[in-house]
Amino acid sequence: MQGLTMDYQLTLPALLKRAEDLFGKREIVTRLPDKSFHRYTYKDFVRRSKKLAIALGELGLEKGDRVATLAWNQYQHLEAYFGVPSAGLVIHTINPRLKGHEISYILNHADDKVLLIDETMAPLLAGFKDDVNLERILVFSASGDAPEGLQSYEDFIEGADESKFEYPTLDENDAAALCYTSGTTGRPKGALYSHRCLCIHSLLVSMPDAFGISIKDTVLPVVPMFHVNAWGIPFAATMIGCKQVMPGPHMDPESLLDALEREKVNFTAGVPTIWLGILQILDKDPDKYDLSNLHAMGVGGSAAPEAMIRGFEERHGLHIIHAWGMTEMAPVGTAGYLTPDLLEEPEDVQYKYRAKQGIQLPFVEVRARGDEGFVEWDGNAMGELEVRGPTVASSYYESPEGADKFTDDGWFRTGDVVSIDPRGYVEIRDRDKDLVKSGGEWISSVDLENSLMGHEAVAEAAVIAIPHPKWDERPLAVVVLKEGKNATPDELREHLETSFAKWQLPDAFEFVDEIPRTATGKFLKRALREQFEGYELAT
Ligand code: ADP
Image (tube, rainbow, N blue to C red; front, side, top):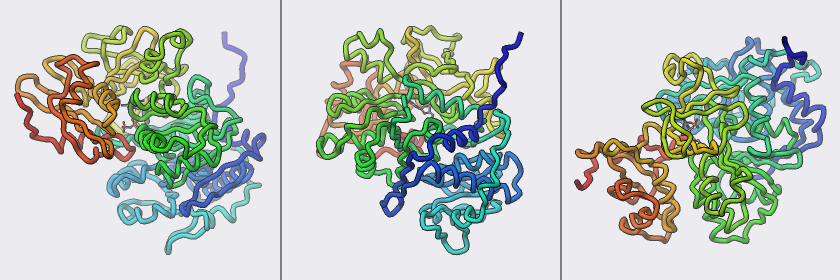
């Protein structure tokens, strides 16, 4: 017998309609390139999103055609987040930190028809424009100006008559947004999200046990809108009717702190590198910024070190929510909140748990596969994490490469090596290719890095495997010291000895000025491995 409930379609236009009906007066604030603030209301946002949908419709594009963006977190980009899918098209966000040939590869692979680009990013065009087949390039600028030879977005939408806009009837399984993986593990591959996926994800991340955002909140996504939809925050915040603050191109710690204070932000989110920078500033001058309104900071993308979680909480009263996810999951999969039984445990235990990646969100299922089948949830046994759920990719967009990431029984292989403890907390121990395999045992590079970053002289640390004649591989720690601080390899080894067995300790420590990063701000271990190729370890 079937249930008697409506087959209502979960689509982004339904969220736009909700914003129109309910949140007209709520505010959206953007820091412009000249550092001034642009302010408008949801009413303006909805009106302009509709104009964009109408103007795109008049171009004669076909349903499902892709419209690319190269843009910071700003209000026009938000209009594209809703206006493009509300025209039955697919918004395809591209990371501007990629090289020209990578951008052209992605634009060509996705067969994008239109590109919306920030005025400040227009110089990037020279690196790929001649290699792609775009029908139109439209420039986002607050002034409405565009560089010579290009059309401005403001001109493009100006003539569109929003009264012609009708909320479309879409299938919730229609494609709404496209993001490519950053290619840390091969060619970039497209994750194509349906409307349903993005709507469910919005509900999941807003829950009190995830990012916990409500209409009373002001949110500032630091994580870029070109990186997995800013973790879905713009969709979720619009669904809820939060005041939204967009940092524009000003992603340096001082500008962010200034915006957090000035706009009385309650929730913000970004990768650990951003927060490490912010923590250093706050530690230097704890009273400089009033962050008393900030109730939580979401951190993910790479592991949030325990020392950082503690540092914010103990020294500044700021609460970090550690989350894990991936492009292929839209992206959030787990969140590191504490269950009631853990709240009764000593503080040390609580911090250990908060540094894990957390518990699966509803409908996201997890399992870990080791060499001999699925591993026990005992907190020790390591295996590759597999996931499934309504926000998880079922295949890559037009790509035979990567087909092996999807199991025959319908799960996605994440490439992350984890242990899962009896309470269900997932802990990322490594990425498959980053594990150090020493004498048949696995050493977690992430565990060593986190512990090193807990040393008071260490700003950043990355651990890589170096080939070893006897043990196969041994760990090398590459360390960036904090300004004005010093530590010797022996001191760092001593520090690690309190939490690691002798055989797990790095064989060597190298001090560098900086660690190469990916376009999304993660340590680029591939480049480090190249840099230290042929490195001789004492045997
Ligand atoms: P890419 O795969 O190109 O690096 P993603 O942004 O999709 O791009 O990154 C997903 C990966 O980032 C995960 O598979 C995991 O390795 C890592 N990651 C994300 N969040 C965390 C976290 N909280 N702790 C540790 N690793 C994380």
